[in-house]
Length: 511
Image 1 (tube, rainbow, N blue to C red):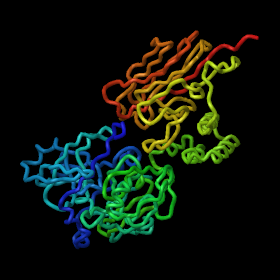
Image 2 (tube, helix red, strand yellow):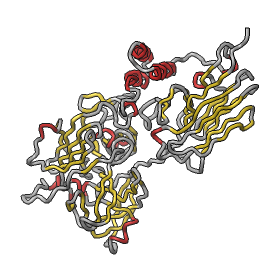
Image 3 (spheres, rainbow, N blue to C red):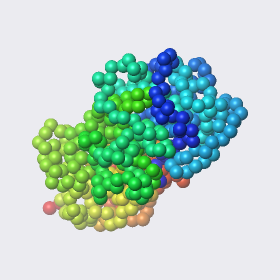
């Protein structure tokens, strides 16, 4: 597992999948039940959070519990903490989670209400799971699986922030976008799937999985592809940052590789669209609304949007294109900060050696450490990186983002250590330090430490969330400078620490 506090929720596959209605025919009935009212989509959904909805347990005015909308979940499940409200168990069931089968208690299914309407459910029982996750301050108490969702035509409008339950037989579908048949995942597993994947390949079915985060989806390992007699991608075909779907290119597509028997399309990819899941009609409609992923910092509030072409070419490692992008930015109306950030990012593709601070000419009076060569560098996750975030499928931008964008700095996931030779030629070190925006809610916490010739001269308090540390130190006569990041506690998940604009200063040399 990657060292992040956000864990991928396991996909829950019930043994009674054969009961799914699209195998037996349409679920539409002459007397359609009341549909739930329109619901607001939580702002985190499709960005860095699940889609969660408030469900009333037992009655329309019953206790509200937050549940994840999970089209990849074979059955609806509640947290074990709610077992006291469900009566006595009526049996057990074996549930498969990412190829691991575990037994769970079964209870008579309670009535569940959403948007003022009683939810339909295939089957009469419900299982419980050990569920300790939370989202946007709400403890998540389970999932709404396909045994509930299959009864409805559900529209997810991420642009408007709305979740709608529609009458698919009477609705005007002209504005829903392109239609794709929903098919069973395979002969044994009837969860909803599409007959293509995010490589643009036809044939291997991809699970439609609104409960999958982070990223856009996954590909089965080549071993499983061969074992299931599926097409194996050509070497380099599944590469960051672009994906293909139905002949269209999608930038910043993040795909993980998993030892499972299918490919998958997750919430991050779905959230780029107006999504209409017409389960009774066995059809998925997609209307593209966003070029990049919703969680991409470049797409949020237009921050640094001028850098988007450069960032894409940077992630493709296309140095000539990056230089052309940089020239266009410098000739545009981009802000001074945007131009500086663009310049620093472009320089990260330059293979020329950087100088140690001790070797710089004396007429240079101000020098960012991100532009210097460290004598030693090590980080606890990924690799040391200056003036950018290293390539990763967890963060969709190389920008040094800690709530605001910084032009220079060091990626320093704990535990980390950068060592610089100053040669006794500098007098002050100033800068800030904090956590990457994407992990401020999930990081266990870090402590920033600075040492001068082996002596500790700065130690921050435990940094969590959006808090930051500022340092302004006298380094007169110091030969060796160390920037260290420690864990604030035993856990190391999400500790994406950043040294922000650490800069050396000295007086101008006298003639």
